[in-house]
View 1: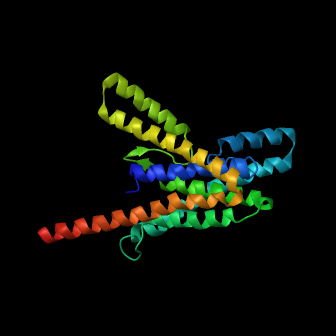
View 2: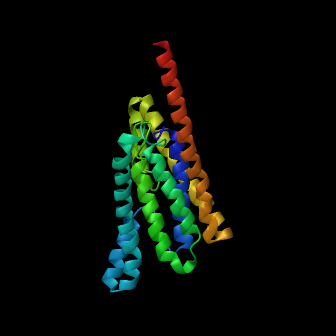
View 3: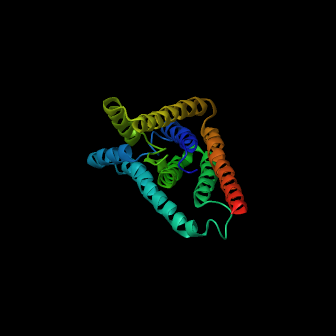
Amino acid sequence: MSESLVLGLLLALAGGFFDAYTYLCRGGVFANAETGNIVLLGAHLAEGDWEKALRYLLPIVAFAFGVLSAELVKRRFKSRQNRNINIHWRQIVVLGEMVLVTIAALLPQSANAMVNIIISFVCAMQVETFRKVRGSAFATTMCTGNLRSGTEQLVIWRQTGDRGAARKMKNYYSIILVFILGGAIGALVTNAVGEKALLLTLVPLAAVFLIMFIEEEREELEEEISGGRA
């Protein structure tokens, strides 16, 4: 279920919202993908503006720690997910995202640096945890790789007529479009509500958390039916 298109779309919706929110409401920082922050870090270092450089360095470090944290959760709980705990390790990550997002939404403008650190950490956990849609690598907090892969599949489909390439192309472009939708919603709600607009991302994240429960129950039912037939 973690590789289903519906989960990818829900996470992309939240990812687009995150980026619009931090850029418009929290000091013009890109929290989702760190390329822009790395470039701006270098630019401010060249100018000798250490304070602004630090503003962009902190989200970069937080992103790295987010990837590390997701891997630690995976290693700690993956082998136990069907024995001692009742939820998938990816659900633990999503639950952590929801807690951190709630904290960030309640922080004032004076804490923008901390909010950007939190959102960068959250995005890193998300992109490290959910890495595939129907077997194909993708990202829910950035679009460059998705655009490259989608266009690559478009070329393959046009040249060979491969239906698998056409399906992958549609998946990639669907995720990009929903990411754009998330950014648009994020911009509108942030301009209207301000800091607490971030709480709206709890809706798609909660949906992801619950959908994985439903799928788990379905798999358990199928196993019971198979066992009964045996």
